[in-house]
Length: 79
Image (cartoon, rainbow, N blue to C red; front, side):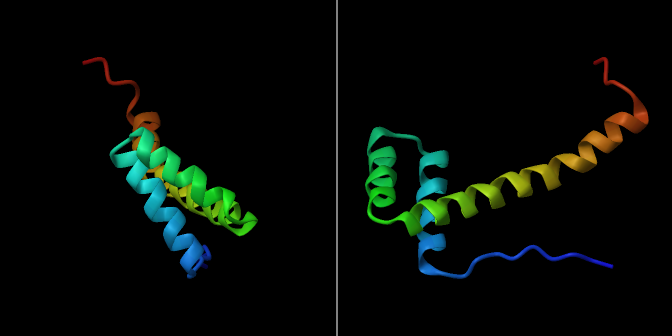
């Protein structure tokens, strides 16, 4: 049985994702200010950013799981 994670499909989520990725990829005061101003516009924007950050964390965990499993199976890499 497979499980599916709901990915929100709305403009607020899309904007939150874009602003977060912009800040992550090219951190700057201007990008941070842009995100802060957008967040202040609506509680829905805060929720959308929370959803985007949750997706980011889950994706990272999914990418790391095979690496961690392999590390546990083979032992530490002493190189």
